[in-house]
Length: 173
Ligand SMILES: [Zn+2]
Image 1 (cartoon, rainbow, N blue to C red):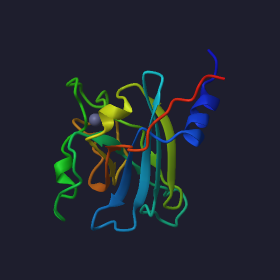
Image 2 (image 1 turned 120 degrees about the horizontal axis):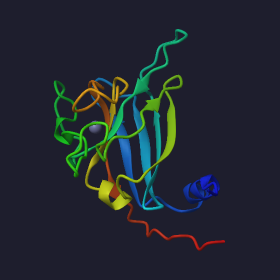
Image 3 (image 1 turned 45 degrees about the vertical axis):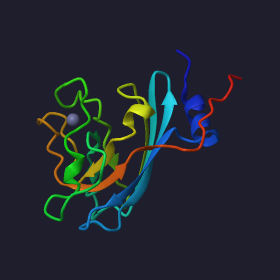
Image 4 (image 1 turned 135 degrees about the vertical axis):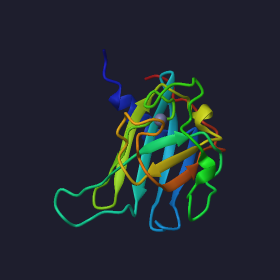
C-alpha cells in the first residue's frame, strides 16, 4: 500500500477544513483553548486537534493524557457543577459499546500543557461531525469502562460547525 501521509499533510496545508470547532475550557480550566479541524479523507475524516493551556505538573513522569471524544449534543452548555452537560454521551449513531462509538477518538497527550494530534477515522465524515461537540476530559480514556472510558470531568468543549469557506478538493497530481 502506498503511503498516504504526504497526501494527508498536503491537504492540511493547502485546503481549508470542511468542518471545525474552537475548543475552550470550563470555568475551572479557563486557560484551555484550541482548535479541531475536520478534513474529508478516504471515506472518513482526517482530524487535526491542537490544544494549549492544559493542566500539567512540573515533575518528571507526570505528563497528562486527556480523553477526547465527539459527543452527541450540539452545544457546550452546562453548569459549574456539571460542565458542558448538554454535550451528552459519545456520538454513537450505530448503538455500539465503548470504545466502538463513532465518536471515540485517540486521546490527546499533553506536553507541558500543549497537545497536537492528527489522525484518521472512518467512523464519520466531517459533515456528520458538524452539529455535535468535541470534548476533552480530565483523565485518559481506559477504552474499557462503559459508557465513556472513565475519562472523568469534561474540561474543554468545542461546537463543530461546517466551514463557510468553500471546500475544494485538490486535483490529483
Ligand atoms: Zn465512547
